[in-house]
Amino acid sequence: MTPFKNHRGIIATLDRANVDTDQIIPKQFLKSIARTGFGPSLFFDWRYLPDGKPNPDFELNQPRFAKASILVTRKNFGCGSSREHAVWAIQQYGFKAVISSSFADIFRNNSGKNGLLTVELKEAEVEEIFQMTGRYAGLEATADLDHQRVTLHLPEEISFHFEIDSTVKEHLIHGLDAIGLSLKQESAIAAFESKHNPQL
Image (cartoon, rainbow, N blue to C red; front, side):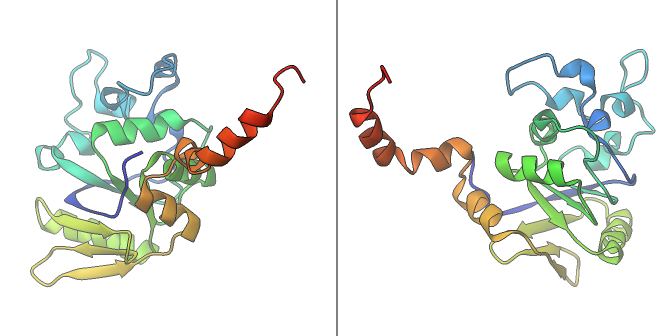
């Protein structure tokens, strides 16, 4: 997977709590076994009207969020059933990081394994980001994984520190998914296979 060290981008806000994985990527889009093409279906039931046209009342359809790459949302994001497709849809839409006051454990784990940074801040800090994003159109932030800091690029910058599991941090910085971790042991695997009798 692609290494993640830091990312600067426009913030988009989704003012909803308890967003579950079926809202992130509805079940009818899980039929594909490929890991591509999920971006257009992100938040499908909210983004589109019954006739297929974009819903003008949905937050992410606002023109000011058109090029956003950092999503800020409310607590318990990614709850519900386990599906990596939810992470893939968020990434393929164009988001590099998601900020919330809390994440469902399975979603957080799936994010780390697929290169999506989840940043957990205090509720008051998330609220401040919502307020500043509403006040400043096109507000940008930098998610700095190395220093575990989110910085809002305001006339007077504001920064928030976040905690992250050290192992997840290392995997993200070096772009190591499960396959990448296995390949680090490639020489040991090759040595074992050279001595292993496939008939046993």
